[in-house]
Amino acid sequence: MDKLIITGGNRLDGEIRISGAKNSALPILAATLLADGPVTICNLPHLHDITTMIELFGRMGVQPVVDERLNVEVDPRSISSLVAPYELVKTMRASILVLGPMVAHFGYAEVALPGGCAIGTRPVDLHIRGLEAMGAQIEVEAGYIKARAPEGGLRGGHIFFDTVTVTGTENILMAATLAKGRTVIENAAREPEVVDLAHCLIAMGANIKGHGTDTIVVEGVERLGAARHSVMPDRIETGTYLVAAAATRGRVKLKDTDESILEAVLLKLEEAGAQIDTGKNWISLDMKGNRPKAINLRTAPYPAFPTDMQAQFVAMNAVAEGTGTVIETVFENRFMHCQEMNRMGAQILVEGNTSIITGVERLKGAPVMATDLRASASLVIAGLVAEGDTLVDRIYHIDRGYECIEEKLQSLGAIIRRVPA
Ligand code: EPU
Image (cartoon, rainbow, N blue to C red; front, side, top):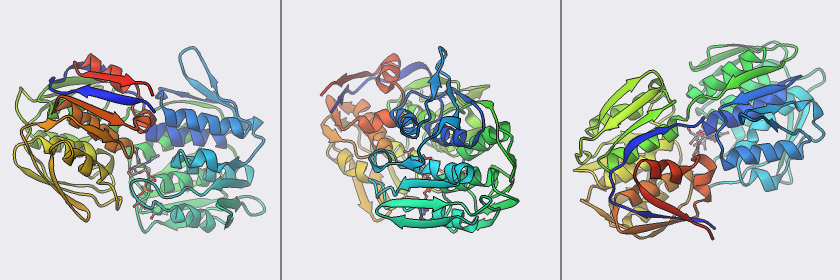
């Protein structure tokens, strides 16, 4: 297993480009299964999760074609299997996103039930109930969700989510585009990635209103067709580099990103003492050499503070001036990084869904273990502000969600290298 070795102490300083959003690219790739023609996706990030989705398509008989500009064209008409097998689903929970499109377009789908994961139990009951409300017959058998559309296809339905779910909203939104009649999704996720997916579906011919609000209304259409869509910038990658710069008292300019989808994060960085400037497609942060101030935050669905940025802010608080409280409300077990940071000399107390972080002047490099994608990113940030070498193990998590992380950090002046297993 590859490891990253980071020699801390350098302030980040420089300019990098932000990649396409993983959590937008995955549902958009799944959405191509709804089309009756080729759909071209641009600005796909080069990430392990994207490769896994492409591999899953290959198993189903759909071979995406990559052109010379790295755009990917998917034509689902060659589909020969409606099964998403466990060995792929267990490596990537987002495989569940093929469920809605397959039942809606092909009338049947068999998707392995994803298990629990390092951040919580993460059930998919709301995806299943939503499809049932559209007439699907669903059985969970031998670890697989087996879903069959009724005679004549899915029908529009009224779906109320009692918990805001991002991929749940995306699955039902995709299924509804080809269902007969109107579907209303209430308490829908408002995440920008849901909006990006809706834009792609609309380009394919779908009739969707209300995306970006908590009530999405979809009028089903007969068919969806060929389209071309460019994936939005990754707001979590953007936020991660901003926090890394803030923690190291540095400055960065991030290009090909969008400040309007990062409001809660930028507000917290300003509270920490950062000067933030924005322009068309770029964001810059400057700490003017100052130590960040500890901040308090509480995660919640968009537009509130994202759970996917929580670990990175814990890392910044670990070296900040003062004490900060971080409350995690989305996932029940997302503080694994805290114990690892304490091994580096951080002072973090975890009580249930709250962590109280008292900033120290400097962390000390140590071998640490990444437990999930965002926890890994936070340990890299901790390594950047630690004295000496930090060895981050199990970095396959990072490769699932951060394109070329060591090259990008190196170009900002960090000392970081990958050690192959
Ligand atoms: N939930 C249920 N039942 C369901 C679905 C969700 O109880 O059927 C609960 C979950 O257990 C959780 C809450 O609802 O407590 C919210 O989970 P959600 O369904 O929104 O999460 P997700 O769709 O599985 C996506 C992202 C995650 C991100 C969350 C929250 C993708 C592919 N994944 O997951 O991203 O943390 O939304 O914003 O979009 C990451 O990129 O590192 C990552 C984990």
